[in-house]
Length: 223
Image (cartoon, helix red, strand yellow):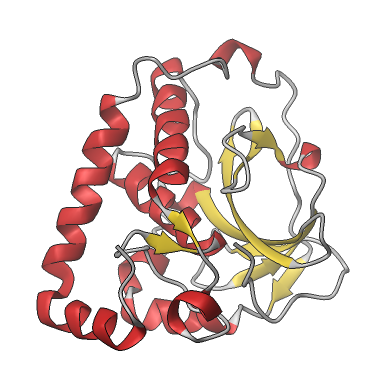
C-alpha cells in the first residue's frame, strides 16, 4: 500500500523499528522458503574464471547514503573480521537467487520523487515501495541475516543504459564480482551488465572507493 508522504512518516514514527524488523523477517522467511526451486541460474553455470572490479582510490559518497547511515548505522558498519569475499556453495547460491527474486517481485518500483517528494532517499523499502538502492539495501539486509558476510556485499553506483545514475549490489565472491539488480533477476558478472562502474562502498571502512575515471552521478534516483 502506498501512503501519502506525510502519512507514511507518521506511521514510521508511531510503529518504529519494530514494524520494520517484522517486515524484514517475514521477507527473509519467504525468500528462504522459495530457495529450493531456485531456478535456471544454476551454480554450475557460474564463471570459473573470476573477474573483479579493482578499486582505484577513495571516492566521495552519495549524499543520500550519508543520511541513510546516520539512521541505519548497523547497515553501513564494516566489520573487518568478516570475510572479504563470499565462498560460494550451491546452498548459498540458491539463497542468493531466491532473495534476489523475492525482493524484485515484492517491492513496488517507484522513484523517490514520486514516492516521497524528494530527489533521492535511501532506505529499506519498509512500506513495500522503493527505487534501485532500496531494493539492493533490502537484499543485503536479508542476505546478511541469512549468514552472508556484509563486508563482501557492497552497494555500488553505476551509469546505466540510459546514461543515468543507478545503484546495484555487488557480491564479491570466489567466482568473481556478481551483480544483483532490480532491473533484472539475472545475476551477472559485473563486466557483463553493460553498465559503467563508478564507485562502491569500501570493504575497509565506512567510506567509498572509486572504480574508474568517469564522473559520479549526484543521485541514484532511477527506478
